[in-house]
Amino acid sequence: MIVLGIDSASVSCSAAVVKYGKPPIESYGSFKNNGLTHSQTLLPMIAEVIEKAKIDAKDIDLIAITKGPGSFTGLRIGMATAKGIAAPFNTPCVCVSTLEAIAKTASNSHEGILCAVMDARCKQVYNAVFECKNGEITRLCDDRAISIADLEKELKTYDKPITLCGDGFKVCEDNFTDLKYTVADEQFRYPQGIEVCYLGKKYKDTAVSADIIIPTYLRLPQASRELIKKRGTLK
Image (cartoon, rainbow, N blue to C red):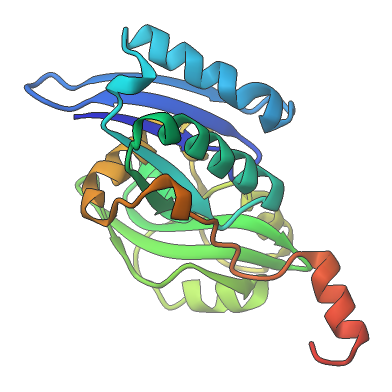
């Protein structure tokens, strides 16, 4: 099975091709966190990993794409790109949680409680908590938007080492008061395309046609929230 993994949901951007079959597994990844917009970087990265893997787009058996939460623009770029690659060949697609991809990446070097966080603004983060043991992660809660204060209070109930991972680590550092934690090493802090491929293969039974995949935002865009609040229907 050949899997293409795509992530453009956060500040970083990544793509990978993984060839699953007889060991050893072949993997080809590309990652950027250089401030350029994903509309400029994602397609060249995909072209790069496809060329390194010596395949054509028609050879891809499955496309795995991070569905969110994350940047509204980034998610739309990723989804549109996946649809464009899949459509000519009817390639099935699997949508995976951005937060789970973050935790899976962090699991390569960290054990215990993995707290995946993405900055959601207004002293909130998109978050999911996982436990990692021997490199395998177990989800402890659903993806959610949560206040940083409530997250800190919850994390204090765990009796295992806590590692923050994801682009929301800094806003947590700035607002946590007395929680003991570490931050994932930079090379394991952001979602990697190879781990998106892994999750796509894991959840391959949920694969669907590219024309029906949609992002998961968890909450409305800020502009919509402000409009609703102005109308008195959002607290």
